[in-house]
Amino acid sequence: MLPDEDKTKEQLMSELALLRQRVAELEASEAERKQAEEALRKSERKYHNFIASSHEVVFSKDRDGHYHTLNLEAAIGLGGTCIEDIEDKTDYDLLPKEQADALRKVDKQLMESGKGIEAEEVVRNAQGEDRIYLSHKWPIYDDEGRISGISCLAIDITERKQAEEALRKSEDIFERFMEHSPIYVFFKDENIRALRLSKNYEAMLGKPVAELLGKNMYDLFPSKLAKSMVADDMGILKEGKTVTVEEELNGRFYSTIKFPIFFGEEPRFLAGYTIDITERKQAEEREKKLQQELSISSRLAAVGELAAGVAHEINNPLTGVLGFSERLLRKSTDEEVRRDLERIHNEAQRITKVMDNLRTFTRRREPEKQYSDINDIVRMTLELRAYELKTGNIEVVTDFTPSLPEVEVDSHQIQEVFLNIILNAEQAMTETHGRGKLTIKTGKIKDYVRISLTDDGPGIPAEHLDRLFDPFFTTRGEQGGTGLGLSVCHSIVTQHGGRLYVKSKPGKGATFFVELPCP
Image (tube, rainbow, N blue to C red; front, side, top):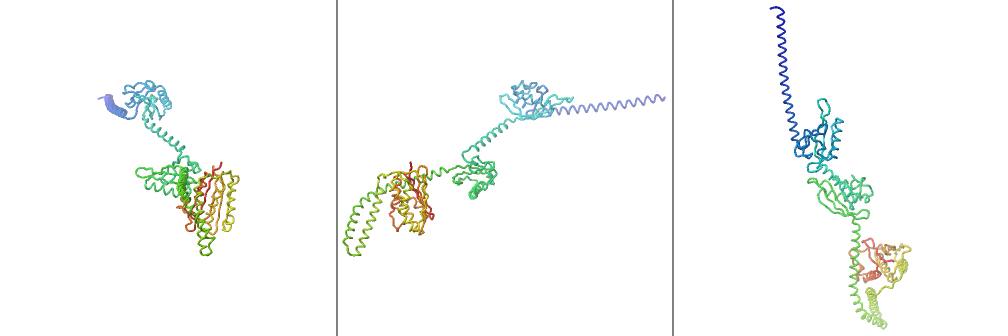
């Protein structure tokens, strides 16, 4: 074989090998293409399955806003009943113009920026309800890298927004309640620190609420009161019970209901409200005094009827005893008999004095009133006892308010009232200390002129206070006293339209108050 023929054969073999290699490459490429197509089909099936099965709203739009790929949730959310109702339509075909404008504005912003956007959007559904969606949108790019549309995943947050709005309104109502509450409202943590306080605590404690939060009771209240409050609060958190307590602060009284707030089975916080009961306490005190005065008045009236009859019945035989004892005294020469007769005569005179008091007590005549200066009446009364007070080592301190309005009184009767009270105080101090201090003050309280007479004697036991103005009640025991003096005083002051009462604690003296109405 010629050399040229051999060369041609080698070339043919080489070309054949290349051809076979090319065929193999084409076959491999075709297999890869088929694998890629299968992978693409699987991916598309997964994508469509994801869209179809998703409980969220999923859709895509082209640049002109036409809906293409979407799931049933998106179709229903846009007012349709199936996907075909929505495909190829725009927001302007489906929604009110103002909603469509708002959605289109967000879409344009995304396509111009090329960046994903998160936005809250409102869409009206088939039932005419406006639903709120939290939309996550991102651009779709074509093969040439240009934005050809948008994709969106949206979550219906209507219920959450409604709950947030309801919570906001609830918090707003709560804040307004805490700001305008007429009662004091508080919340404390497990360490008894103030978490929330109503605004009226500012007036009670003299500081802005903002400065009070986070503080414990020892920072807010006097230590003695704070110690009691902390003990109550810790007991409530420990036992998980509701309690009611009364407390006093700066001369005012408060009633507080405290109760635990549970998390699970454990009390974690403390809440409560406080009411200012000062007026109620004062009203109860006034009612108690009125009840006492009514009780005294009713007892005086009953005893008065009895006393009038007794005085009348005793008066006739008593006149005989006095007359015959005096007659016998003039005739008797026996010294021992005279002493006995004098004893009888003196005791009969004492009974006469008791009868005079009874007649004064039961007398229903109107006092002979005229306008008088109460300070002058007190001065004249003190002058009557000046010597006895001085010799009895009784210091008299007066504090008279000048220019008091004159009161319409029977000055002799009112002087009798002051004299009786001074005599009682004088005797009590002398018997207890052998000396004493009597303080007399005058002043005007509302529509009354008030006279107070205070001694530093032994005081009056609490069990005697309610009976002090009862007829025949006396604390002197065997030392004498008819028990009519104060009851007569009470009757005189009452006839003048006034009040007579006493305040006393054992060992700390007593104060009698005489209040007479002034014009």
